[in-house]
Image (tube, rainbow, N blue to C red; front, side, top):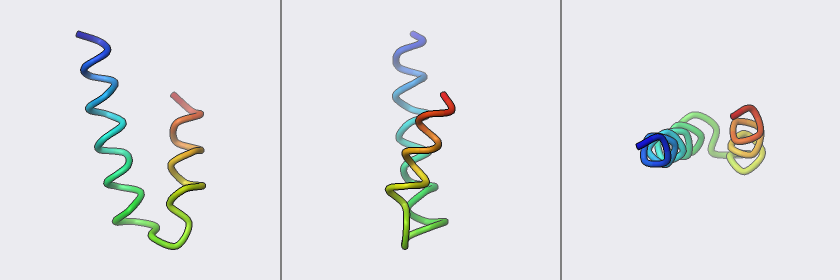
Length: 36
């Protein structure tokens, strides 16, 4: 259950990074992943 929630969170975070910060989404997503 927790694993599925984590995967859903990662998917939403990736979409947010792409929409919010297209120029440096790799860095933004990496930082977001590090925090969790």
